[in-house]
Image 1 (cartoon, rainbow, N blue to C red):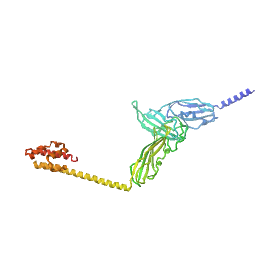
Image 2: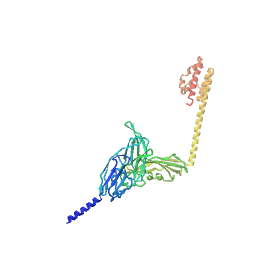
Image 3: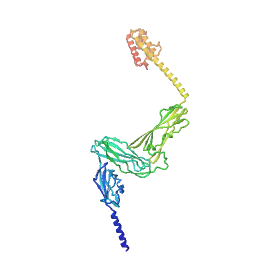
Image 4: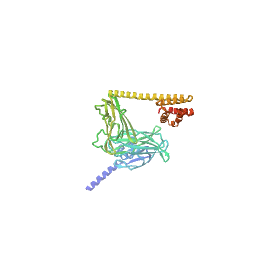
Length: 487
């Protein structure tokens, strides 16, 4: 008796299941779809007991982006319902969408082939590839999703519709155009993508917004990227909240001048390059400067510029810190101590930037230095005056000797010219011919050929010699000294 009762209950349960198990038909017009283009799927059910609005598309979300196109349409007369959805493939190649569970029954898998995108203007294929920097980042560490669009066209527009990511910050990359040469054929490459900075640790999954390709003002392709699966590591418990996760580099830390005056404002410049850190997570490094008995620091003016490219998020930050020196002396600007958490090594890095040495001069020191400068300036001017006067006298004396030698040559004119030349050099006027010749040889190389012996024979032995020979030799020496008047 018990056996027949159990058999009856099983039969009733089976009939109830069969009564509620309605078939779900999936209608796809095409199975070859273009990457970046949508394809439409129509789902039809032959019963109204379970609504298609409750259909779970989660099994498809790994391969396609599901966008509902309309509300569920019910037909009371036929007892049918229909739902249209629009799908965007997340990658190229063959896709096998698993069956969907509806009213306790799984549908058959859906087989699709995603072909490369095609430019609507050039009709040439678009090579769209992406690469993720890491899938196991630390909390607050940047993750770059760098994509390349290789295409024939050079001038194209990419748009990045911003959307909120729960538990992460999202930054679109600036489009960078590159023209490499592949196999002798130029092909443009456009670098695009996203930078994601997770705020929480643990297993996380993100649906990134699409990257739009715009041609002639019209969006022709929407490139949905594969789901971003991250295993975010927690930051060490000993890490202070003021230490950024990334890298920090100091490019400038110092004053424009090293000489300061008391009670006079100067400006301390500090410039940093921060990579992988949003501007809201960068600490105020100027606040590390503390006033002391000699130096008074005031509130800094901050200017930052942000760049996002295939290398990630980069910040150029500059601080202008007003500085007031209180007393004179020799001081050094306080050293700058920076810390950041390096994700690559998982450790805290500490950077010490030494301060600049400065001299602070008071009023009496400045007056003393000014007086010293005046004295030194006077001495230098005196030396220059004496030197110029000597040069002018020597030049004019040699010119007078040349004029004297232009007269009819005689022993008297030759002797007078030699005396003028000796006066121009600062020598005694009663030198003998031999003494004059030795001194002149130290000044002019050509003086070795001067006929000093013949001049002795003419003057003291009465030997007849051509006076023009002595005049020409002296004229040659005078011209040589005029050309080297500053030596």
